[in-house]
Image (cartoon, rainbow, N blue to C red; front, top):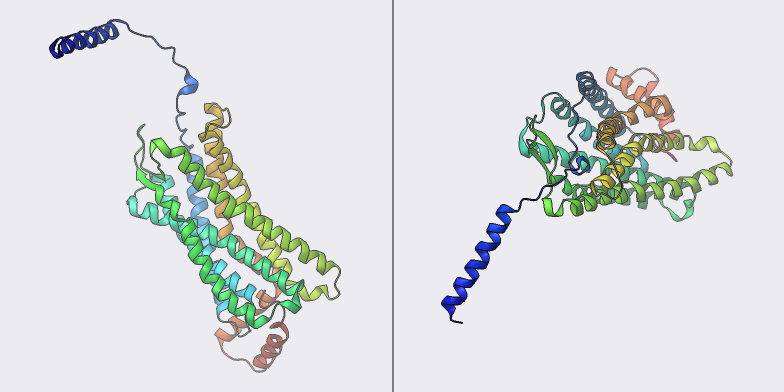
Length: 358
C-alpha cells in the first residue's frame, strides 16, 4: 500500500470514529457527593461578633504586651534567660496583635488590601506562631536546667546562650513561615468578596497542603509540646521533693503561660487536622460536615488569637514579682520619693537571683 493510500485509510478511520462519537451520546447520573461543597456564608451577627472580637483583642493585646516589654526592658534587675525569652515572647504576641485590624476588616468587606499585604501579614502571623511556641520551649528547658541540673548550668553561660538562641529562633520562625507565601488575594469562581487564603496548583494541591500543614503540626505544635511536657514534668517532680518551694513561685507564671498556649491553640490544630484529612479525602464526609469544619476553623482561629493578650493578663494576676516591678516602674516615672530608692534596691537584690522578674 502506498503512502497516499495509507493516508486516505487513516483519514477514513479518524472521521468514522469522530462520527460515531458524535452520534453516540453517553448520559451520566450525577452524584451530588462528587460536587465541591459550596461555602456557607456567616450570619450577619457572627460576622459582627468576629469583627468586634478581633478589634477587642487588638486593643487589649498591644498595650498589654507593650507594658510587659517596658517592665522587663527597663528593670534594674539582672535578667535571667527566662526573662529574655519572655520578652521576645511578648514581641511575638505584639506582632500578631498588629495584624488583627486587617483581619477584622476582611471579615466585614472581604480582602481589600491587595496581594502583597495578604502574603506579608500571613508571614507575620505564621512567624509569630512558631516563635511563640519555640520561646516557650526555651523557657521550659531553662527552668529544667536551673532546678534539676543547677551544677551543670552556669548563669553567665546560659545568659549568653539565650541571646544566641533568640536570634536563631527568629530566623527559624521566619524560615518555617515561608509556606505563607502560598496565600493569595483572589475572587472565588463562585463569586463573592475577595479572599486572602492558600492557593496551590491543582495538580499538586493535596501534596503541598499535606506538606505545609504537616510541618506546622509537627514542628509548631506536637514536638514542642512533647519537650515542654517532659521538661516541666521532671521539674515539678523535683520541686515537690525539694525544700524551699516558695523560692520557685515564678514556676506558677511559666506553667500558666504554657497552659494558656495549649488551651488557645489545641482546638485550632485539631480542627485543621480534620480539615486536612477531608481535603486529602482520607476520611468520608458530606457537605454538612464540611461546612461544620469550615465554621469550626473560624471559631477556633479566633480562640487562638486570644493568646496574644493572655500572657500580660497572667503576669498581672499571677506574677507577684511582675506586679512589684510594675509598681516600682510607676513610682520611678513619678519621680524619686524619700526612702523609696533604698527599699527598691533591697527588693531588687533579694529578687534578682533565682527566678528573675517573673
